[in-house]
Image 1 (cartoon, rainbow, N blue to C red):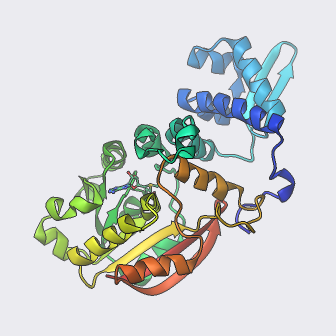
Image 2: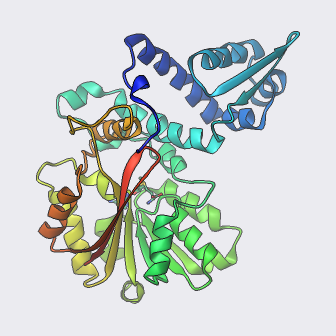
Image 3: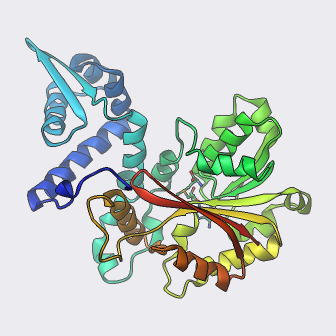
Length: 341
Ligand SMILES: C[S@@+](CC[C@H](N)C(=O)[O-])C[C@H]1O[C@@H](n2cnc3c(N)ncnc32)[C@H](O)[C@@H]1O
């Protein structure tokens, strides 16, 4: 049951949708200013307003709007003093992740829906700074991928599209023998990954970060580094390559990796899209539908909805699927595919 939301709240009225639009603008302002974390820490409105240079009455009005239209803010008033906290249902990092991703990074694309309707949407509207902020988590990544890497004894991994470096940093921090190379085309993501290792000479010696696109790996990796890699990982990266119906981009990337790293293990971790499925229950897949919409708005296209669609891709690229794992989390149907190039 991906997502625990019931169908009851699946269909927003026009007024609900507009209320949500204003609420998300307010939430975004609190995230961008850093005030969301301050709300999670709790405090009087006077303290929070003073800390961020806000007008206390304006802050009270914005928080009151959020309190009345969403479940994220709790406000308490005593005489003329007010205090506010983020609801215990949420961690600030969770609100920040969702807001950075769907409002900050993909928001500019959603401002141009007319271009999607005309079939001329472009990827270049994604705010890469906000996107990189969304992929720096404060906890370990979900346990399945690290567990699989340990089970198949991968101790030297190339993480392609490594984002803020969650996976490699987690693996290297929990296994003294683990080394890795993280590559990403987004400079800001790599700066965050490097920054997270800055305080640890141990991590710096065991993880190398390279700014490059997947199709430039032949230029960026030395033959020694390339030969020393045991496995490759593409976690939430292939889903960005479905803009063309012919699937030529995604098959092209898989074919390129097969040529560069013959016989090596490739792990693909991604999700099944739902937007094109007429029978998909909208309540339980609300988060997936939001994600699918962001994929469309940013011209990344929709990845396959089923295992068979991914298998077709692999067979076109002549890559062998060894094992498939499925699991639900964050309201998305995730999978991990273990492949041999
Ligand atoms: C959704 S994020 C996932 C980040 C990380 N793998 C994770 O799961 O936390 C996708 C990442 O892939 C990177 N990316 C997308 N296309 C890429 C390409 N062609 N070459 C290298 N990196 C790419 C993006 O910059 C972004 O950091």
